[in-house]
Image (spheres, one colour):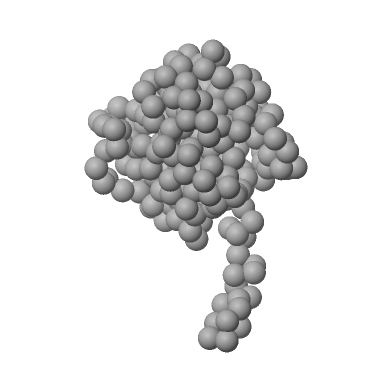
Amino acid sequence: MTMDEPVGAAIDNAHDPFLSLQVVALVASAGGLRALSTVLQALPAEFPAALVVVQHMDPHHRSMLPQILEKRTALKVRQAEEGNLLEPGVVHIAPPDRHLLVNPGGSLSLTRSEPVHFLRPSGDVLLESLAAACGVRAIAVVLTGTGSDGSDGICAVKKQGGTVVVQDPETAEYSGMPASAVETGCADLELPLDRVAEALIGLVRGGRI
């Protein structure tokens, strides 16, 4: 605390729950419904980290992804809205045609800024914001999909001390995204799909890799 910092502000910072909250970001494209279902259904209701998801989808149609996934997991699943606060055991999913960002205070923002590599929402945009907001508390997960979305973002997470998990491309329905992520050299773990949830539980509960 500096001489100019109010005592109350220091106390508030010390008790800010976001400062100790780990945040898991999952990025998927083609084949993502099955992959996300497999991971989320294996996580317990009391999972102590917050979760955010970018799944590439048709920008012109309302997404039913939150409703579908909520039936397949014990976690709470919501479509992200501007100003939502991250919470343990709650999954926030980017809506169609909006970038999803994590803010330093633990709130979420949505934006219609330019697509990144023709994508909105973009996994790279989410992961880069996650890296800046959470640092070592960030866990990035790249799952099945075509293209290379997420590859730049995981390197941002790694640079800030976060952890990167990538689905083994050989177990992915579409190997493009995970293969591109592996090629960056930023992955801490490369796992078959059915072991991703187990790794996440270990990381958030015991910090082991």
